[in-house]
Amino acid sequence: MTATPARKRSNQRRWTVLLPVVSLIGLGVCGLVLLALGTSKIGAGPILVGAVAALAPVAVVLGAFLWVDRWEPEPAKILLLAFAWGACGATITSLVFNQTAHVLGELINNGDGSTFAAVVGAPIVEEATKAAFVIVLFLRRREEFDGVVDGIVYAGVTAAGFAYTENIYYFARVFVDSGLGDLSSGVVALFILRGVLSPFAHPLFTAMTGIGIGIASMTASRRVRMVAPVLGYLGAAGLHSLWNFSTTVGTGSTFINLYFLIMVPVFAGMVWLVVWQRRREQRIVAGQLPAMAVQRWIATSEVTLLASLQGRRRWRRAVRRKVGDQAARAVAEYQVAATELAFLRHRIALGTAGAGSDERHAVLLETLLTARQAAVDAPGALKAAGGVRRS
Image (cartoon, rainbow, N blue to C red):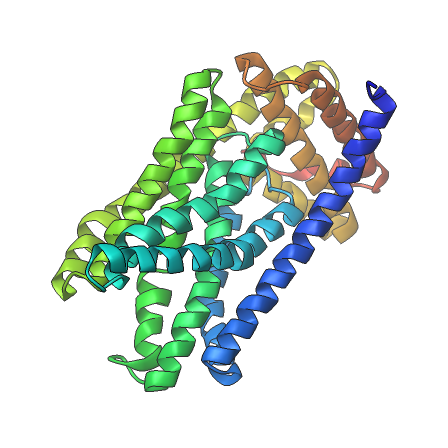
């Protein structure tokens, strides 16, 4: 018996509500299991020390990715789920498979499985588990991806969660062995290594997969959509393997050479790519706004303000100063709605929007008009734009 359209919509709504709830419950259970394992092996006190020491690096990393994601901020609930998957789901899954890799390494390497697990098993498994969230999100919510930046942000936030849990364990274990220590030993020395020199290590690895998925979201070629994420994953696993090799097998000079000759240039290249892609996003939005003004979806006087992050920020500041925080929030929601619609119209023009793009366009247009009406209803919010200096 064929399901009616109403039944299909009901099923979709049911899964839309139930799936996040079930996922959060599952991740919560994973978190409790990890906490139980950590406290039973190391102790509650060291775990607490590790959690505190790991806060600063993860705060810096998350702040950087949120700064990158300013044109069209991704939904907070999805970013939270990404972080939770990295911190709990990917971590406990990797733990299980890493034990298997360790046993396999013992069989291959005459009883020494730690090297094989670190250099081969861990990169393959950990990058796969971290990438799993981004891939599932792309397959189920492709409209959340507008390009490479979105792929990097989702992958980076997921990896930040993974790194946070991993850092808690490392800091706690070192605290048990050497205490707080100093610049050469203990938690302080490890904090310099993991929190100062390499807080972006895991996010940098997984961002390679994010780049591949971001490229897949931008192309109409089926072959590129299949190949790009695979190449991204291979790049992530390769970088991760090199890093683990330098810290476990190599000497101090091996680590220094890898850090400055490979990791620093790759990180610099990642920063350049993000800057370039953000400029591309600005050109996309600026290119779509005039046509939206012709349709009278936005005001012609607002085109210049919406075309740059500086103009948007000055507009919000002017509204907050003259009208208040509520009006500024209404303007911010209007700005985000305009950006989402501009990106979708660009993808439709390129033929990469996928199925259901017309329905998605109608929904986003309604969202835009509703958001603008909310800004209009906030006394003086749109009038404040008249006093903002254009970029």
